Image (tube, rainbow, N blue to C red; front, side):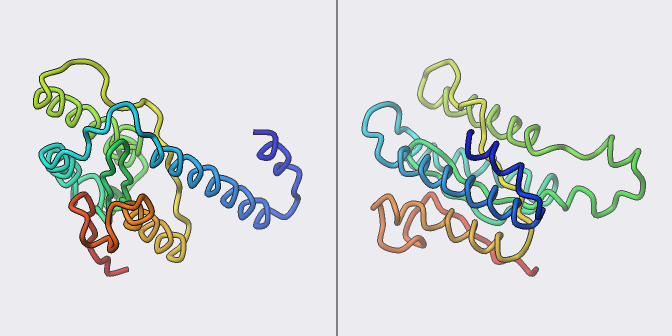
Length: 178
């Protein structure tokens, strides 16, 4: 947090944004490394049925609340790349936008709520499944999108689970036309 606080003093807005992005990227990479190294605790997301449940719920809102681009369901966390811009394609005014647009936190709440319910039923357990916090990144350009897709799909390779991302059953990717 101290480093982030120091960045606010950079006058050049572009340079400040690049530095903030790089700092957040390093933080997320470090967090991912920690998650990959955790040997104790729940790792039930590696179960094929749970991967199916999560994938089904993520795909449920594709074309409605977002365009699904990619995801990677790891043993104890999920990476998701979506474009929520599809919600505004046919909106004509600000009032309609306020009424119809569903923010990312609300979208994730829908996915987490449903998957939590179905996974708990499958595991015959109750209680909270997901952390309330999510680590989201606003993608500002095609290069960032490409980097995040690559990062997401390479997650199981980096964790040593497969040699090729395409071999991992918890990965999903659809080519975009953008």
